Image 1 (cartoon, rainbow, N blue to C red):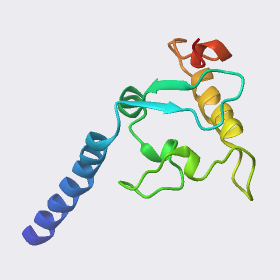
Image 2 (image 1 turned 180 degrees about the vertical axis):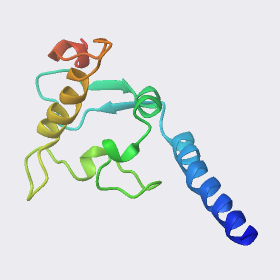
Image 3 (image 1 turned 60 degrees about the horizontal axis):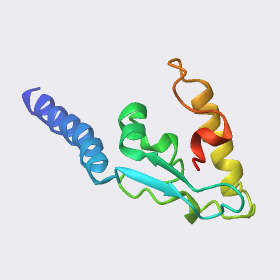
Length: 116
């Protein structure tokens, strides 16, 4: 029984520390500039989002932990196969999450993210 408890403890430490290690490698700021035509690029505090959400898969939904990619690797300027265009993916994922923000501090209007 002690061996099982020790093994379980080691597994739990590994699982929970993996998130901290991955988050430590995440960029502090991120800029989405791959498809902007008429609006300025969107720069956001990636670290603050990661700290608040605590689940990278919430945004990086197809990537394995520790292997998260930039959104543009899957979401191109135009819809390709089952992947939404980058603009549509961001507007749905980001705006929906921002609209649910209880503090009402997350921007939901164009100029809130596309700062001039």
